[in-house]
Image (cartoon, rainbow, N blue to C red; front, top):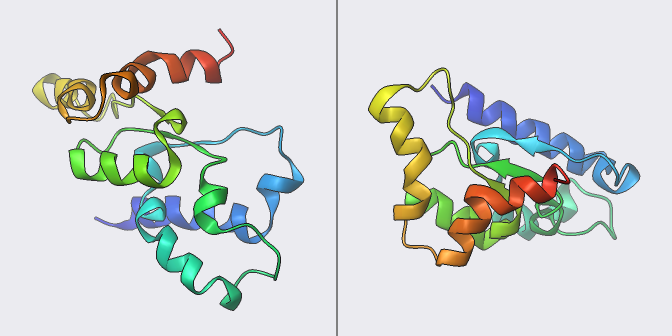
Length: 136
C-alpha cells in the first residue's frame, strides 16, 4: 500500500544525497504521484540535514524545486502542500492511466481545477508547464 510512495521518496533522496541534481543539471526528472512523501517531509529533513548531507549542500526543499512532478495524487491538500514546497511551476497534470479509468480517471484530470488554487496555477499545471518542459 505504501511501497510505491516510499520508493519514489527514496529515489529523490538518492538524487539529492549523491548530489546528482547539481552534478548533472541538464537532466530533467519527472516524478509521478508528486514524488511520494518527499514534499511532505522536506522541511523535517532540512531540520536534520547535517545528519545525512555534507556541509554546504542546498536544503532538501530547495533541491526538490529542481525536479518536476505529476499530479496523480488527486487530493487538494497534497496538491497545495506540494505547491508550497516546490512551486506550481514544477507540477504537470497526471492521470495514472491506464490504472485509473472512468469516473476515477476524470477525478485525476479535473481535481486541480476544482482545488481552489489560483487560476494561473491551474493553467500552468494543466498545460503550460508541460509545454515548457517539452520545449513545445
